[in-house]
Image (cartoon, rainbow, N blue to C red; front, top):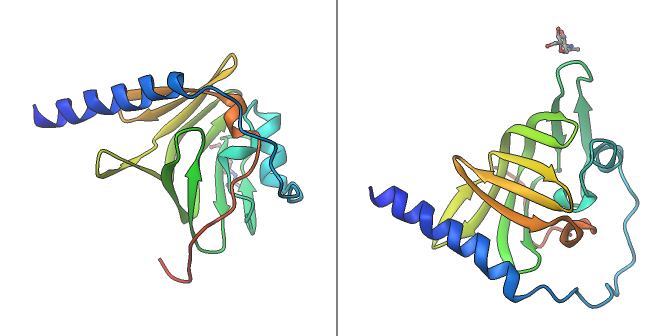
Length: 158
Ligand SMILES: *[C@@H]1O[C@H](CO)[C@@H](O)[C@H](O)[C@H]1NC(C)=O
């Protein structure tokens, strides 16, 4: 039961806060890093490039099954817009991608309510992205993910 309360609070946190801060970010002063193949594929499947950090070192996709693996050259810590959630990417992120849908996602976690939550899936829904944390979902405007975040902390092993 306690877990459900946590999840419910998470829904509130993810779901309500964004609406209080929908002003667009000021122009990004940093130059855009070049797009990797992984980022281009995200666009092909209907997702914004900002779901992946800029530091992709290797990318594989099975076009038939949709199974993919993205290597980031190390773990990666980023701050997600618009509410500055702390998120971490594992050295390797895997999942299954099809048009507008990423499932069986492994390797992306978000810090909220003093806990780390694994993002298990991402769906594209109109102008929004729907993030799945188990049974719980949180919706964000896709335009918040137009830029690839840069890794803030680098750890050589994980
Ligand atoms: C790609 O996925 C298909 C369907 O699951 C599978 O049959 C095939 O062996 C996979 N190819 C590679 C190179 O892993």
